[in-house]
Length: 208
Ligand SMILES: C[S@@+](CC[C@H](N)C(=O)[O-])C[C@H]1O[C@@H](n2cnc3c(N)ncnc32)[C@H](O)[C@@H]1O
Image 1 (cartoon, rainbow, N blue to C red):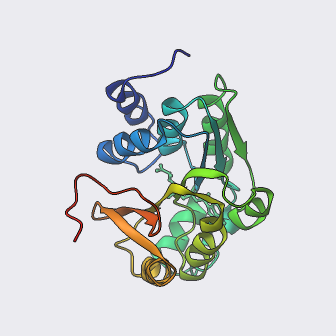
Image 2: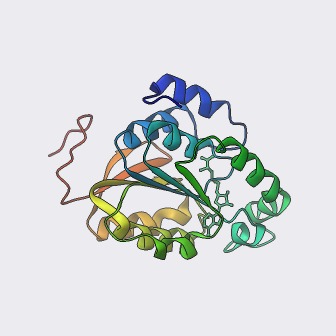
Image 3: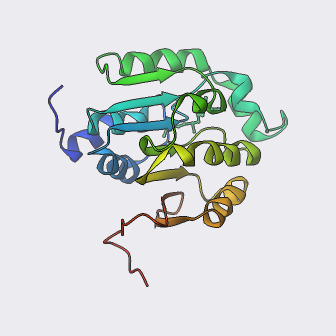
């Protein structure tokens, strides 16, 4: 693979992945945020649609963390909820195999087939440039994901949090604000956070 791959090409390749949710704006921005990264982490990979944006943007290490396992996906959601029933109906193994094939020619991408909680202790504090949290959005799990992963992010790094419009992620968003993280970009259903002592300022926002 010849780096750098232009943004438009990355977007095209990500949007060609059928299994996933990330849209054009999100994969484009994720790629931009990961351009100079030495280490990126995605929690919640599914078919690899958004992980591919990280993988094509940087030659650094890219970790995709996901157990691809029904019980992990339904934890925190009752069987009688639409959400629980949907996750029980999908074939996690088949999606894992497709994702593995998609990443097979990219040795800098490592798929860690485990939960976020099991994977996070293997990462040292202050070592990750970009973390994308898009795993199980049940209230307690979403919150424990940001508590586990924020210490791993370098001072000038960033956290991308998905599904900020879900009521279940509101306590997570509040925890971030209460713990020194600032929302620097808001894209309706996903947001970028940076630790407030970071010197980074988003040129697209008016900072008071
Ligand atoms: C919404 S999908 C990810 C979508 C993907 N990022 C995209 O944009 O296409 C959520 C994923 O979280 C995974 N997941 C569920 N519980 C998890 C956990 N405890 N840790 C990490 N991933 C988890 C599921 O297997 C599923 O693949």
